[in-house]
Image (cartoon, rainbow, N blue to C red):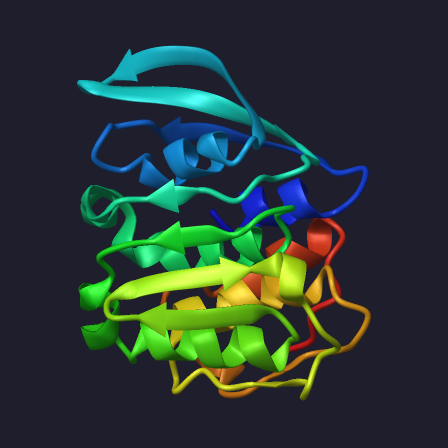
Length: 197
């Protein structure tokens, strides 16, 4: 999900990701990005061990904002941090509903998304359990420090944010990325990132 969004928001990007599980209980992020106009092609779809598998080809896209109801949160609750980065670079607002569970993950991810997007100059607010992001109201970044509260998904999501900004983001406690994706920095840099550990 992180590299898909990186390719979608950065100019002249194209990546391929092979052997992706397309199980309908796991592909919520792909559904959401397609709703936003993401150019994601699925090639060589096939069944392996009862699961639908495919290869993804992702091109830079002009993303649109979208509204997702609470049903989407059951498909992709862990992907809302990186989806919020995509929404930050869309050409219209997004509203993601029913994100109560984000408050009780490794951190209060809902609050951290709002705080860090605002720090990066992206208008974002929480309305009950809903997240509203309006990139048409963007301002200059306020601070380059990204607060993660030791949360690996927040850290990785804002590392992707950093690939698009003109300032260098300092991601606090980035070492916690290794708890779920030890080769994240190396992989990101292989496709054009500039992340130092």
